Length: 350
Image 1: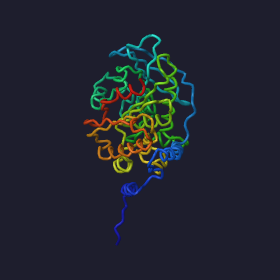
Image 2: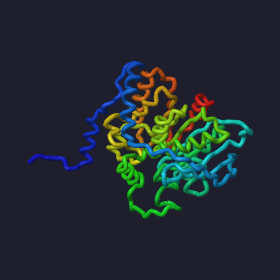
Image 3: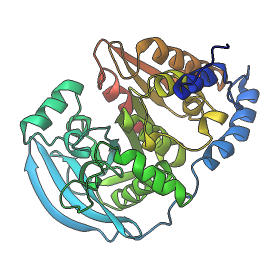
Image 4: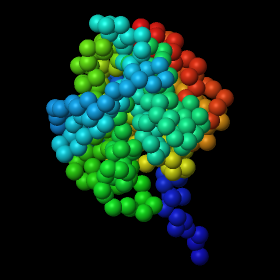
């Protein structure tokens, strides 16, 4: 009798290990890079499905306050037909009347609180623990460095988790809203990525309308799932002049299919058929990019994270833009290294 495999997870692991994406980067010079990028980007973009229609943000300032050396605002904006988002903005206290500053969009990662710890909300012990564990309040720290920072929740997270107050959706047991909402999105021809990117664009449109913001100097950064959103926002919005992807570098065969370390907000139908993650990041070349890797990261293990970075580095070299790619490989776990961020954004945003 033959010994056969009945485990579909093992099947997918073997398929992934044998898989070579159709648009895997193989060019050996700048002309080859340009040809690859021109051919690959439309195929990658098509994986995202439809983008929602743009809506008027209809902004409403809920409150403004001062804490920990920053002026802070909470706004409500419309981002989609039938859906709004809360938007947090941090302003440096030394902002002079009539002065404009560079702004950084700060995407959050997975966690119960969404954007709140990223933007500096440390009002309870759980928030404080998240900030401490991952150096997670980059939206606050970068405002202290002189930038205007802003952030919204992606769908399924923070205030836009259907089970969090004030929302009324019934619990779904141990299922992940990231996965369920992406199922809904794909049934309607979209993806969570296309939805979240569009919501981020509308938030950025509104932030750029504020008199304190220099719309010619925009950056984007985020940790983990926020690194996913940083990557896609940077790819889809040419207004961003610099980006920092924090602890979201790896190979899909390993962190995704082997380790099951991804969810509905990170995937799109047919994406891995076309590219692996270093190829996707490489589509950003020649634009300025800072990559953070944690040597002791247990979500994205350093062995394959550095393999991803080395492939990305080769793409930047072939694009004649090696100087625009930087690495902050820090000794910590899954979290923001913060060793090069200030200098990186100062160099590219001023």
